[in-house]
Length: 486
Image 1 (tube, rainbow, N blue to C red):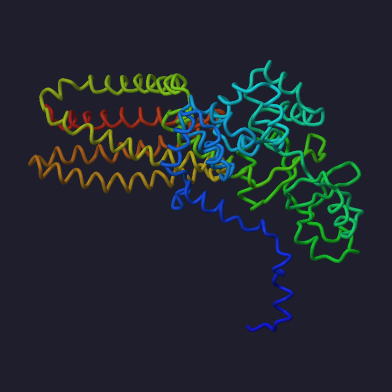
Image 2 (cartoon, rainbow, N blue to C red):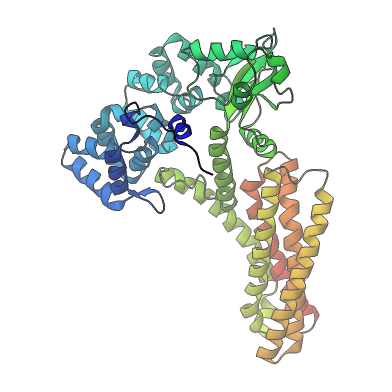
């Protein structure tokens, strides 16, 4: 579609009045030199230059290299360099180490840096940050260090953080931001626009305005798009959305994330026990929570702890060793089952060759079911309303897979060793163990969840033990009953 010159002049900014600072070619080039554009990570050569400058004590070069980076990339740089160089980097970049960088840092890296800073320096950083990020910075400190940092803060900021710290960890109270715009429903659209323009203490970024009654209870929301399109004379009560999702201040952060995901929320009001508006949670916070919770469940299934490469070695060893010792105990149980049939194994040595196949395939099948069930529990897809249906579904899947695998391994064994009876025994054992794997894969996490135990932490140990024990017992027991090892 063609436009005349007058139309174009109204759409395009005048060349003389257009802001020159909108284009920063130097910064773009520098970032292109430091970032790998394909995977958006810092280039190894750039990290090496920074490390060499730190080693040489050339703080000016370090500052010039780091200055063009986005705060998130500066945070990545702290994780990529050696631990001993992190304090040097913090001192070299000076004012670049602001609240935005601290908020993006890995938990262990941030904790290490904070320990090296004076309380007044930590307080200064916290005051630059959103309330939820400041709480994350301070909450891991010792009680004495927390009080020292809070003592250095402005009274208003200190009160907000102390209020957040009063809530349990990983709840909406810790996650929420207290920077929220709330106005009475008696306002008109014009009143609201005038208020937003003249108040200098409003949040720098927001998407919704919360409408409250005389008791400060949220009664609706207005998105910015509605406000901009509505006539100034229209009351907010006529344009606000009354149907809203309210988050109790004590709700677990994982449940908060599920609500955001289910209802496609951008932001949500947080209310206290009396129903008063005390803060809001925005979708950018939820993205981090979803990533953390998903990674946490995956790593817990393997007993690997936090799985963070910045985690102290001793803490990692302690976490992994604990579960390895538990696994050692379950392995001894499986070994005792094998010991019951050592006479049969001695008489027919092929049993020792083939029995790991049955237990191993059962373990794999159990892990598949377990992963699906733990995810379903975590996302509220599996509840008491559909547990029986889920059990029957997994048993049908296990029976189908077990039959297919049984036929394959049974036929291959019969042909390879010219022993149809051996093929029938291992095929039958495969079916039995797959059924056990399917049943254990769903019953163990569901039972642990009903007992208020995190199924992601303990399920894998019990499922593996069940499939190992039943795999050995079914195969060796059938071999004895069939007379194969007579």
